[in-house]
Length: 67
Image (spheres, rainbow, N blue to C red):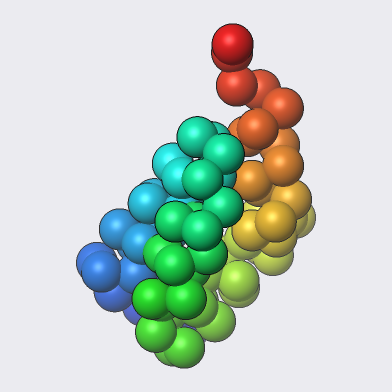
């Protein structure tokens, strides 16, 4: 069983994705660095199960953004 992702970590992932979509790299990095190690491993595991990584997800989201 995969470890749980804390609510705080889930919020930080969301903040990172929103910041990346705005093009605010420093805010995205800050949010990602705020994620605890256990949640980070769980996030990576879940993304791997979906066949992706966080950098790939961000790139995909940025490509689908409407101007």
